[in-house]
Image (tube, rainbow, N blue to C red; front, side, top):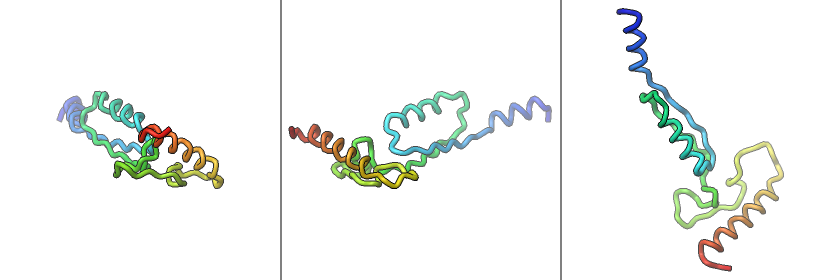
Length: 104
């Protein structure tokens, strides 16, 4: 086989696996996927690894009315004192729920 034909054949059969780790990415995930879709290479697969269980408003993805406010909403890290972060999340969740359900 001609060297140029072999290179062309390889380019046409090239497949790429893209592994995209994410954690509660929200709109950033949409931007990342769209960026991948805009690439010139068309033979690819996208594998999303989402370690998050909730969205930015602490709503669990699989349910319409379940919210969490504990350490599971915080990305895994080496920090041991997460109390202030959880308190801040509780205040943010309370504000969100007041707005969503019309309480003031």
